[in-house]
Length: 297
Image 1 (spheres, rainbow, N blue to C red):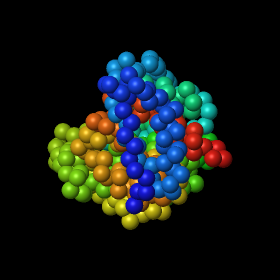
Image 2: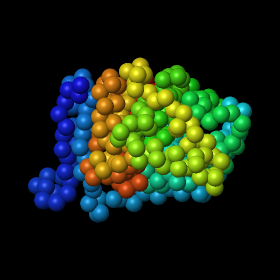
Image 3: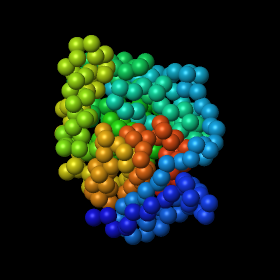
């Protein structure tokens, strides 16, 4: 069970007049919660519009590179410098759909790598049966092909499912992990919206091949519930309380299974809430990565 109480952090309305919760305050509260030995659940309220400094980073302006991985050619882009951070995108997404504000924040501290899953964007499709373990194998081989033993991992939605498989099967390739809008299965009472959508993609003859591959991989996924306790990495789960696709209760359950994990719930934000509030999501991720750096890459 989670041993620490949820901390409600509000930075809006009347409370702004009496106390401002800075990102450092958030990090300090998370650190204090970690001292209990359990997951650290933190509730962060939505930002005010003025609380959004300007960060810029253009994905389209970055050159596309290619790496031969697992029998296919994967397209990737890279940004910034420092320890490597691999961003694993979600269902149906490509590099171009990564939030550029969050990307700018990450690349101010880390060497960030984005890539298209096989069959998506600029990457080859290949001929192997699509599965989430296959996508995790691709990620593991990409890390090696880029010249690294391991990387920090940020996975969103389906990308977080792949990140779990990556950490469980190829732990030597993983430094630590952020699981954004995650689940341990798509066949749960709480994930019926996601399941129906995935099934609709497979049944639609006009679905693009790569998208259909991802949908089939999701339908074939057996989930990770019985294996979550085997993840021996520093893990932070982030989720919006208004997420109807992978509701926040799923991240709460996962945090209970993963020893010492962090749990941050963003009040009133939807699935993949970093697209709505990239500054707060991004800064929270940076604090986690900095505080769990350990021996480095």
